[in-house]
Amino acid sequence: MANKLWEKNFEVNQEIERFTVGHDRELDLYLAKYDVLGSMAHITMLESIGLLTHDELQMLLKELKVIYASCERGEFTIEDGVEDVHSQVELMLTRKLGDMGKKIHSGRSRNDQVLVDLKLFTREQLKEIVDAVKVLFDELIQKSNQYKDILMPGYTHLQIAMPSSFGLWFGAYAESLADDMLFLLAAYKMTNRNPLGSAAGYGSSFPLNRTLTTKLLGFDSMDYNVVYAQMGRGKMERNVAFAMATVAGTLAKMAFDACLFNCQNFSFIKLPKECTTGSSIMPHKKNPDVFELIRAKSNKIQSLPQQIMMIMNNLPVGYFRDLQIIKEVFLPAFGELKDCLQMAAYIINKMEVNPHILDNPMYDPIFSVEEANQLAAAGMPFRDAYKKVGMEIETGTFHANKHIHHTHEGSIGNLCNDKIQALIEGTLKQFHFEQVEEAEKALLK
Image 1 (cartoon, rainbow, N blue to C red):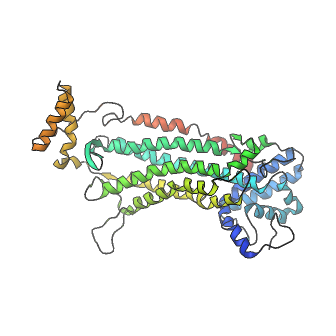
Image 2: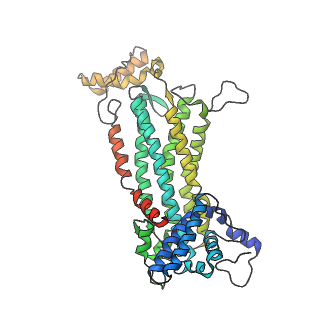
Image 3: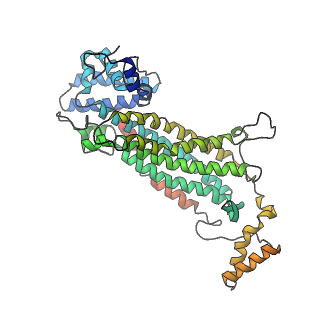
């Protein structure tokens, strides 16, 4: 069995080891390439302050690039008896380079290693979430513009209420995503700060150059206070989880609408056949399984901030093993949200709408407000107009005028999709993903 980085001259009971290590080794595979990136930046800094020679740095960087490439190919594994990704990387370097491989740990702790790994992993995952949100946003705006003149009933209390349109419906979810993007931006900004150099939470007696590692890894700034850098463990995940939950809330609501509008009682939309399934006994069934799963998975993601809060709540300052458990709920959540976004974008792209919904006289009462407004515009007090139209509906003499003319901002006749597009574009410009990409390329070249 390989030695642990912290191990003294005794063996840990195997059951205790199983319990304490938990799922860490398999979850650390999410972090492997980021651990290598962090080590590359750290040893470059160590050479700059005289703790490594130039030749040692070059040999270590060469081997770390080999390990990074194996991570990219999906070939990196954590061997039996090796506790975590940090130990595995150091073990691989030591096998190749001898004692030189052990020098990479100078001036840092596994605490700030995992912190920087989580930051690097999370910011890349957030970029992928942002990209996927933008794809769905574009599909919704395209559909909103395509069907801007197709009317549908709007609802309050699940009662038909007033005229709406598919332009409004698709556009509403697009604007919701534009607001969600602000949460993603805030989460990204809080994530993209460098904790490396905080060691176990109280800094190091080595003259570390934290500004250099911040630049090498493409962070916007560092977590300056070393105690706060450690306190950020859990807080970063919680804040990111809130941003993910906000996106998931939009998806869940849209999925519920789509399931409702797809059923025969509504028949407002038609989903792509490949996104539905049949029944084992009912030949006519086309169940909206993909949207139902999007709804369930999105609701699960909305519980993520609470799960993280319950794990980290009331922990005092300093590191505690409790924080390890956050990985179990946090790391896999990005894949689930990306799947939901991609599936939603696919369905929206293929979705067809029913242009003849309002041909059914059942929906005529939704035009009652239009009639009351016209009477009020002609000079009748609105309360009198309201009463007159209400009486016509009660006596069955109301005749709906379906040629409506809404002009104010954000209404059926003036969707303001260009303004909504400008909102999300303005937010996207503030991420500065190119800064991270350039830094990582420079480190790996």
